[in-house]
Structure formats: structure tokens, C-alpha cells
Image 1 (tube, rainbow, N blue to C red):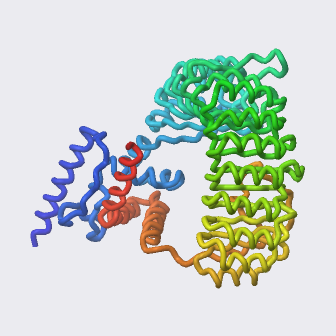
Image 2 (image 1 turned 90 degrees about the vertical axis):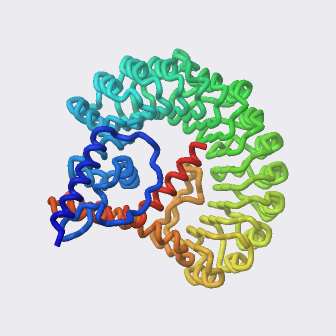
Image 3 (image 1 turned 135 degrees about the vertical axis):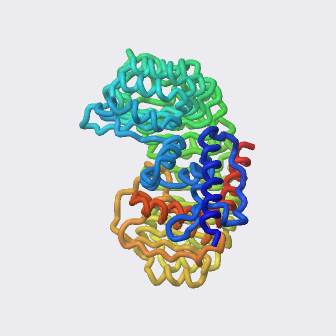
Amino acid sequence: MGQSTSTAAISSRREINHSHRSKSKSTAPISPMQPPEDNDDYEIIDGGDPDYISELPDECLACIFQSLNSAERKRCSLVCHRWLRIEGQSRHRLSLNAKSELYKDIDSLFSRFDSVTKLALKCDRRSSSICDDGLVLISNKCRNLTRLKLRACRDLTDAGMEAFAKNCKGLKKLSCGSCTFGAKGMNAVLENCSSLEELSVKRLRGITDGAAAEPIGPGAAASSLKTICLKELYNGQCFGPLITGAKNLKTLKLYRCSGDWDKLLQSVTEYVTSLIEIHLERLQVSDVGLLAISNCSDLEILHLVKTPECTNIGLLSLSERCKHLRKLHIDGWKANRIGDDGLIAVSKNCGNLQELVLIGVNPTKQSLESLATNCKNLERLALCGSDTVGDPEISCIAAKCIALKKLCIKSCPVSNQGLEALANGCPSLVKVKLKKCRAVTTEGAEWLMNNRESLAVNLDNGETEQQDASASDGAQENGGGGVAEFPPPPAGPSQMAAAAAAAAVAAASNNMAGSTSRSSSMKWRLGLLSGRSLACTLRRWSSANSNARG
């Protein structure tokens, strides 16, 4: 009795709320939601189930969409017109197949996705890519673009990049690889995009090789640039004026660029002393370059990967002046140019060292003991392809490295005896990864796990492969075949609850592209999620955003 009257009243209130939302879309920050006190405030759909999700403001629904992956968002956009609109308006990141056929769809795409600020245009190397007209049209549609990634867009020219730069002056990050525009296009970006903070260039084919190469930079962006990354360039030294002119540069990464870099590093560090992170990989650089880098007294992160001309002498001179070093990655390429002497110098001068990765380097117990004794904050250690690291060295690490949390050992002559030392040492240790250590058995790893239940042990005794530190992170490589993992005990209640909530959202999104009844069902499921746990979730997000803005 009275059901029809109640239902009519509910529908009337819902129409008023929906009309109010469609007239004016709020742009205020999302505030924590309170759970509903009375289910009568929500429409009843499909067998008496309350439709909580339809009462959510657009901003809250957009916030939910942002926690889903791309495939789930696509399925959500098929539920109804409102979801289609909100999904498009709340999508800030877009990746497109940048073939020449894309041009005819640009208008419709960016009419729907009108809030895109991060755009990736990637083309198959065997296909014809988007041309200048397409890029200019996109720049007219996306005036607020802050990030652009170009991959294999070989039909873009200097003229197209110049027109784009004039339309998108707020660009903060540019990454281009396997493109054919040259120095003029790059200089146009640097001159017009004065807010540019990150620049990554890989295999830029349009740069002239040799002495006739047009210099790049510094431009108006020089004062705002904080990160420069150059990869696989025949004449990367033409970026010298840009690097030298970037007075506020914090990160410099040079990978596999031809030419002698010692002289340029001397020039750069004479004017730019604010660098805190430097990566040098497969580069012609010697101790002269390391001595130049030592002028950057605030340096915290250094990667030396396959630079065989760098020796203990250069590492010694650098450590004496760069005392704030926190992360050091060295791939000695089995050249034996860097060893105990250089590592002992680092241990004595860089007491704040937290992460050390040694690949193709042969430290002995002497240098490892010095590192453990002097670097009290050492938390992450990776030893890969070291012929001198055996059970005695692991025992030394176990006894001395009190703060060590993560240990990676790869292709070293370590046995089960070394694991026994880890069972009683390194009180802060939480994870051990063993890869291609032939003398370590599954039984030994299980024994270690049983004796330290809080320790996660990963054992991989797969086939031997060539040592490679191109990623400069020996502690993060993925295991191949023959992997045995011994995880720590289950996570706490809060982590389990978070995982359950994520699983619920993913499960709901898998069914969102069905019929009308299925769409209503999915709304109801997400509605239950909103009514029970969304309030807490949004409180956490709101708090996190406030902290980030602060």
C-alpha cells in the first residue's frame, strides 16, 4: 500500500536532481560523501534494487572512471549516454594509432575527448604516419596539451612541429622517437614552449650528422627544463647549447650517443651545477668526464653503464666531492676497471648511500665490508655477474648490513651456505632475489623462508643469459623459467580490503556493455560500492590530493 505514491515522489525528486546537474556542472573539488541515511532517496530498479549510482554527481562518477583501466573505461562508456559523456570529458590521457588515416577522425575524436592534456601518437614503422596537417589540427583542438609523445611519426616535418609549438605553448613534456624532423623543429618547440620541463629525444633522424649540424637550444624553455634524455643519436652533441643553457637542469640521461662526451661534460658542469641525477650508458666518457661531473656537489643518483674508460680514479675523484650520493649503479662490463679501490672510496665519502647496484664488477670482502660499515643507510643491494661474490661475501653482508631491506644476487658463486648466514643477519631484510646462482637449491631457499617467515624469497635457476644493465636496475628484473617464489605472510586487513574493492570495480566493469537490464544491474552494483565504501575511498583521495597540492 502506498507504493505507487512513494515511487512517484522518488521519481520526481530524481528528475529534479538530474535536471539540476544537467543545467550546471560543478567544477568544485570533490568533498567526502556521506552514506545515505534512507534508501527512499533512491529510485528502485529491476526487482526492487536501489539505483544508487544514478544519484552520484558527475564528478564522483568521473573519479570512479579514473580508477579503471582503458578497456574497462571503454565498456563503461557503452552503458548509457550519461556515462559516455562523462567518460569522454574525464579522460585526460589518450593514445592513438597515428597512421595517416587518423586525419579524418580527428574532429570527432577530440569533440568527444575535449579534456585531453596528455597525448601519445604512435605509428607502425611500416605505415605512413600522420602528417603536418593532422598535427596542426590536433593542436587546434587541444590547446591545453601538456604532454606529447611521438613515435615513428616520420611524415612530420620542421614546419609541422613549429605550427604545433605555436598552438600548444603550455607544453611541459615532449618525448619523440624515430621521427624525421630536425633541428629547426626542435628549436621551434624550445622557443615557443617556455614551460617545457622534460625533453626526451630518441633516434631523431632529421639532425644533420657531422660539423654542419645546426645547434639546438637554448631557447625560451632553457630556464624551465628540468630533465633532458638523449638516446641513440648520431650527433647528440648538437644539443650541447641546450644542456649548457638549462641552468635549472636536475636530470641528464645520455644513452648510446656517438662521439666523445668528456669535453661537453666539462662545458656543461661549468655552467650547470644543479644536477642531482646523471645516467651515462654506452657512452664514450672517461675519468675526465667523471672529474667534470664532480662539480655537481648536489649529485644524488649516478648510473655508469658500460662505460669501460671509467676507472677507480674517476670514481674516487667523484666521490670526494659528491658526498650526497644516494643511488649508485655501475655496470663494469667485465672490464675490471672499477673494483675495490673505487668502492672503498665511495663508502668512505658517501655515507648516505641507500642503493648500490654492481653488474660485471668484482668486489671482494674488503670493499663490501667497508660499504656495510660506513654506509649505515644502505637499503638496496644488487650484485650481478660478480665472480668474487661467494658465501664469505654474503656472510659479511649479513653480519654488517643492518639497514638492508632488499638483496638481489644474480650469476654469482653463492651456495646454500650463504643463505644460512642471511637467516640470522640483516634484521631489516624483507626480500631476497636469487637468479642463476647454480649452487643455490630450492631446498635452501625453502629453508631460508621457513627460518625467516617475514622474508620473501624469489629463486630462479634458469638458463644463463648475457648480463645486461641497460635498464640500470639489477634488482628489478623479472624472473624467467624455473622461478620459485616464497612470499611472506598474507597482507593486513587494510590491504586485503583495498584489493577486494579493486576486484569489485573490475568485476563490475567487465559486464557493462550488455543490454538495458544488464546496464541497470551494473549501475546497481557500482551503487552498492558507492553506498558502502565510496565515501571512505573519496575521503582518502581527497586527502591525498590535498597533500599533493600542499
